[in-house]
Length: 421
Image (cartoon, rainbow, N blue to C red):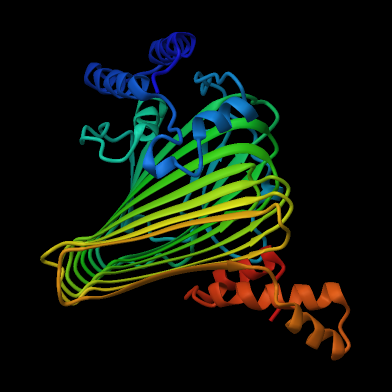
């Protein structure tokens, strides 16, 4: 769908205003303009595109936000409210407020083991993903590359705070970060969303490049209820013996789509993706994963569980791709959903695309209501109906939480959700 003329004009006006106040090179401006032109050709994704058939972003933005403004004035800094910082967990910080980077703090780490590259060259790779990446490239104000040096394991996790406040409304915010983990290095990272704004569209792009034996533990927590629309795309490139672990808690925003594209380029590389939808009150969330097994002896594991109430909607699209060279691939994918009322909805689209003959791959999906016999049994043991219901839901979700391999972060997420063992 082509962008309507008024939006096209608004996009170009806002883009020109950004360029006037920026210090981009002539080459950077050309690349940004090219990205904007690509976005204008098709506009926001809609249900006619296969990967968006369950989540028509074009209509979601029209209905919940209306006309977007793409210009943001990043010349003025924002005051950091330290009360939003996580207590009880020592951590490094990157703080975004209304899309502006206000703080980068690696105080717990050895300074010569981490390199922060300010405003690296704008990526000119061809876009194989979608038009939202073009929008991101066109309007991202400032991006950083975080380089973890060879052999270094971060002492403390990195929490990226995504904070919005009531100074913005009907804005499009675009963020981009690039992480490179050199050989035998490791990074624990938590994306934490804290919204006190409404009716904005956040568009986030991360690129992770994992060298041999590198380990990435990547956690995303969207728990606080808000009326914003969000999209996050993570691209993960993995070399020999590297491991990526991704966990997504998808709950708070009005709409949130998380996409993970993982390329297992090296032998014995592994990717694990686990996630929880906990939705109510007309919320609509989606996780879409693509795991590309591109060489032999690679492994992937995916488990997504949903608890849906009060007209909420969850979508899981998961694809395992195995090319002809990827013999001995082990790929597993499962999604399960509990629907707490008849108006809630769960859509699953599992896919296997396999071009090798010596593989072990499986996928499955199931949805249904809570087992009334189990509730009756628990009530016979002295629990009331609500307690019985909560106990069953907790047990259902704990299965996913237990897949988290970092004990500190596992406890943080349990406390965030309010799960009890």
